[in-house]
Amino acid sequence: NSTGKVSMDDNGICLNLMNGHASCETMSRNRKRHYSNGSKERDAKRSRTESQDKCMSWEDLPEEILSTVFRFLSNSDKSNAALVNKSWKRVFSVPSHWVYFDINLTTITFEQGLDICKLISSEIKELTINSETYRLTSTCQCVSVRVLVNLFRALIDKEAFDIKQIRLLNMSHILSNVDNASHDLVALMTILIKKQKNLRYFKLDSVSMTTENSCDILDALTGKISVRSLNLIHIAKRPDEPIMQRLRSLLRSMNYLENLQVGNVALNDSVLGSLALSVSKLTVHILNASDPPTLVGWKFLMKINPELKLKLVLPRQINMDKEDFENFLIDDMAVSSVYLTIDMSSMSFVHQVIAKRLKNTLKHLNLSIKGNVDVSEVFMAYSGKGDDCQTRGHMTVSAWKVRN
Image (tube, rainbow, N blue to C red; front, side, top):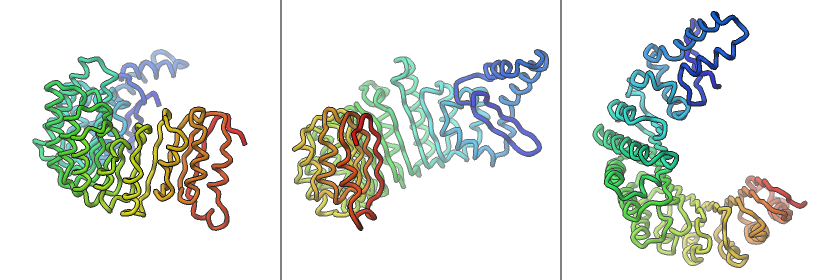
């Protein structure tokens, strides 16, 4: 709720964390207004007492409670930053409990970033960094880059080399720059990745990376045989040959890769041929449907791995005619899942193609459509007859102005 409070009584601890940015004084005023029916003196006394409760007591919480609180703070950094601000050092004074680390660079100051770097633990297992710097001024963006540089340097200095999951989100405004700070950041990022001993999951969300930065990060990931899941949707958005060459080397080196999420422009024949036999799940995000992978590569991939579970995610803005779309969704690809969010006014044939070409293999369909179209064919083909009904997974259709 909007009235954050930390209180202790004989029965234990009650923790309510606020959802918005508000200082303790602001919350005190809000609470005072809320209880305006009482006397002013009683309300003022109550506000002072509860304000003290809200801002007190972090250092008094036992360590076993702190270890639980940290988990909630990591998932609610933006909401709790103001509440925690006054007791920042005391809250983060037990670095041995830092196992899951989730930071949003838009919610902390440079000084708070320095405090984190001093106290950060080498026992971190999951690292998530959200850099929504496009919301900030250029000056604040520079501060965020400096915080991130210090953070990666601290992780390296403290030998945090047993991280299982790394998620780097909304990094475009940082990794697309060519200044010295961004160069240092990528250099430290690649060192940290190379040093990891048991990295299982890696996600990099950066739409507009430079070719040089993309190549450096792909080089750092190459040879990490422990990796099971890779999300590189945007890292190879442009089919530059240096990027494609490194992507092929990366895939050849990952013998135990189970899940790969990548844009279709990266899946040319040579890259598809480099996919390891053990890849069991392939999520393809159609970033440029006017240039889909050729059928030769897809057929080869399905031949060497007939059990592959393929999920296609199509954007709203897509430019393919019916013949191209049919050819792309070929029968022997054994597509198991299709996620479509599309305006049917521009591609009214999509549901017909699905019904016609995928009725024997499709297990999961999530279809979000817009436009005055008849989707009865999809239901007819998807429901099947007899034993076929038992082989289906689930189907979700959300639509506007749908006939029948």
